[in-house]
Length: 265
View 1 (cartoon, rainbow, N blue to C red):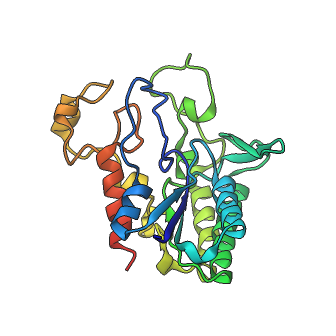
View 2: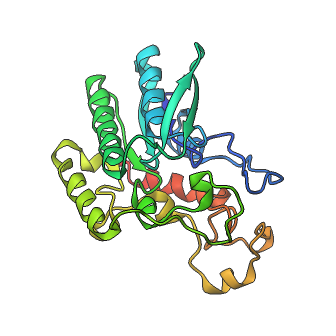
């Protein structure tokens, strides 16, 4: 019996992900947790769920770890997402849902909560003697400061293409405050086991989504439409589903799996 790679995350991780923007697209390609498990010669338990936030990611891993045989778990990876999401479960069957924006807080309380999940996860794994690697899949807060797209705010499609919500405060000043908040957690986080730390790009932090998923070839951008990407022109520069849907495509998931694998030591 193979050991288990245990993973949780949002839509960039979910095994059964489908594109809401392109519902006709077949997105059944192997996702990065399954690809990584294959590289590690492990079985994969993928708890990723589209739209969910860090509370779900943490809780889903906590419940699996405390309710199953620990001797079978070889590696645990939380793929952390945006800090402004609010998760909650409904009914006796614990059906998880969420709000894209937690209306009961602000970016500072959201970020502090996200960091506390990271610390709690680390403590849990050390308590149960489990190997782990934390991964920042999506940028935790910067998109909120610089402006969210209408879909992120659950705003009707009446807004024009390219509309972005304006942050109500001083984004530059508040970014500095959040950087200071993150820095205050430096001595609580095992940075050798956190891909993306210190989370802000000015000092070498990153999210895997921004680092690996997208395009960086001007000619390629000119050649594709703003609808589905023509499979005939997908190449090493094209790692997202389309210019409207920036979730990883088949190649994007392969790159994420390879990126994590190369850094597991």
